[in-house]
Amino acid sequence: MTAAERGIWLDDVASRDDLSTFAERTLRLDDAAVVRLRQRPDGNIVAWVGTGFDVLASRVVGGTVRPTDLCVGADGLVGALSAMAASGFVEPGFAMDSAWRGVLPPESGFVHLDDVPARAVLDLAERGAALAKEHSSAHGPPASLLDQEVLAVSSGSTEVGIPMRCVFALTAMGFLPPSGSEVGAEEIVRVRVHPAWLRVDARFGTVYRRIGDPAMVLR
Image 1 (cartoon, rainbow, N blue to C red):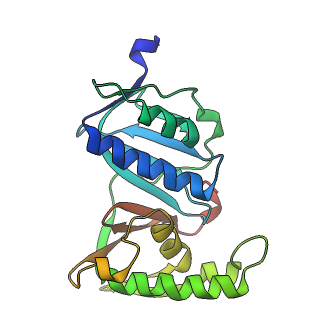
Image 2: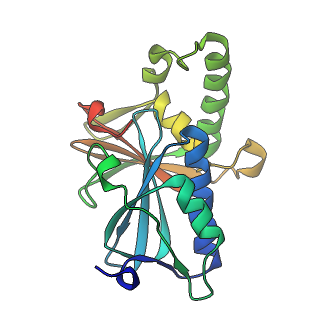
């Protein structure tokens, strides 16, 4: 593949800004983070990253990526996006496919369980942050806090618990506004489930938690 055949082509400045925000948030969690970019048939790109909570985060932006599955360093991506050409072309830098560990969720097969008020999720995040500050060590929040299921969502005979890990990942990636005053009473967080994955969709992005074998998720 020649240099001209390899790259990222974004639809507009808004797509660039969205992807840049995603990469910058990623760097706050891990300064050596790798972002995985995958092409969707609908003409969009899905950006993936491991959050450090044993939870994957993703955001969709308009554009094209070649090859159709590409891993790049988050730090290099931030710099490349700031230098995006007028055509929308972004130089992806060195390929880092070998640095990606774990598996990605499937694109389909998720069942909608229920919607949760976004304000309730933000409230849980604030209380969790206070507890984490009180009990954290040099290694971060205790696993007992991260694994605590803070929401139970059900539909029919199916019930799933949402751990604090997912709540922290949503707020750390900026997928919800930072304060309840910016969230309307009608705003929701949508919960979907797959036999192997839990999926939580918020305004600015989605987080996924592996069910049964979270160690398969990029850390």
